[in-house]
Image (cartoon, rainbow, N blue to C red; front, side):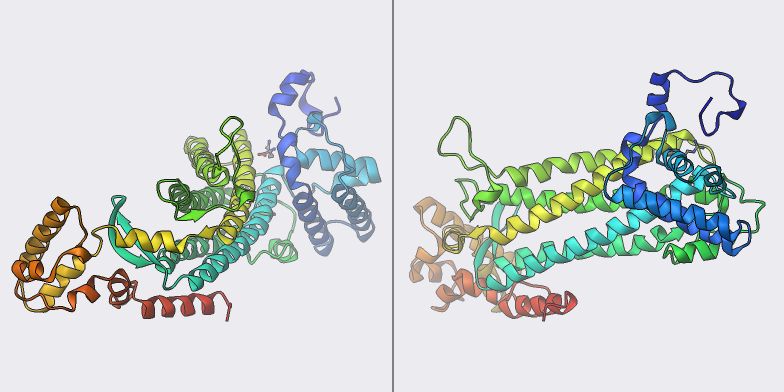
Length: 459
Ligand code: ARG
């Protein structure tokens, strides 16, 4: 029996059972974190005089050899050794002999695997944070170029009121800012060391958990050993934050897809982010935006999958928890990929300002201006709304827009109308006059851009 835990067994499992239970196929992604964790553990064991200097040195040297090989992808793993932890322990013993077996003193795979995942997520949440920062930078830069680009703002996907295109882009900056805040906040809980909790109850050895945590760069340790080995909240939180982020990306993608349709023609994707059709020569499909929208589904799926895995597991470690990894890895790959592609897509897209502006002149999205105009002259807003509604109806019946209605007809609708209504009706005026805090008026938008630039250290 050559299993590392084989002592109490009389029979080897069949190979296919080994394979079913093994996680090595995917948890080998944790190879560097696992070695890093082992290095900290063994240094701590030495410091606490649990291991002799010479034993510790041999183990540390051996782990460094493995780390080098891991970086060069020279290690070979086997399902027979189940997971990354046992594979590495086996490789260490092969490398330095039986002294390698002392590494696992005062430790269990339960605190080991949790430590690996904390290290892994801490690293990747930081990568995601910098990708989010880059995306925000791209959006703010785009916004800066489009403060005075007049864009039809929608509600119910019906033209509502004209806005500055920059204002629309900055709405997404606000969402991504919250996403970044959520990830940052979650780091407090990711950045904790479970190491030294043992299988569940702590250990009889006089270990120093603070020391190994410090070596690993964690800002603190889990306070309860049972919680430490069974907690997967930090992964659920990561999947949840990632689901919200994907929802934002997906909404934006939906807009990009609509905007690049022939019906809208507000933007054109750069060729890099579009594909053609194998049959229809005229096609330019916004594939990347569609794919990001589609990938949102798998991230939601991972969140629900892990919530469901966890809901029935009694304390502490259960093998069910091995199911925590693939969704986490896939979410990291998905988020990092989507953020990179998305930023590139925004940066390179062509904004057809003329089409956008023209759109705002061929609709009734300036109707609120007329109602506000009358209300500003003392008419109760409800009454103004009614009058303007009738004016709109007249225009629709005549097949014209508000700008085209004669002054006499305006006078007929209300004596409060003066010649200046044509200026008020102009979409650019309509946008610029909305100077209330957080509104789309150019001054507000410029201020918002400055604020974001300062936050992003872009000035
Ligand atoms: N491969 C296992 C996992 O990913 C490691 C922990 C195993 N612990 C145990 N007691 N079987 O969850």
